[in-house]
Length: 71
Image 1: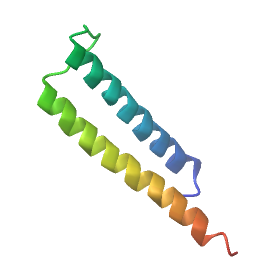
Image 2: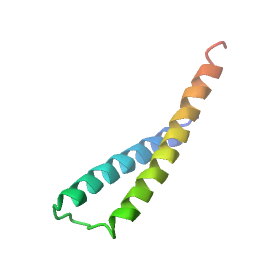
Image 3: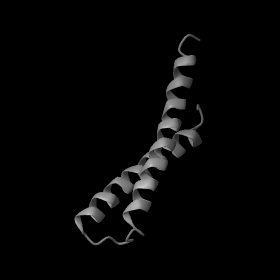
């Protein structure tokens, strides 16, 4: 993942995951949101999916840097 586009996708995935965490926390506290979530189960599912995507993208960045370390 040497391209800028790869980094931008990883940053977007992390930012979206952070947004989902905040939205879930606010929804569970009963605070009104600009875009209200459908339900809590959907929020938990989105958190799980986006966390896994973010983890995979960031792991690929880490591994690609380690492989190029010896060169």
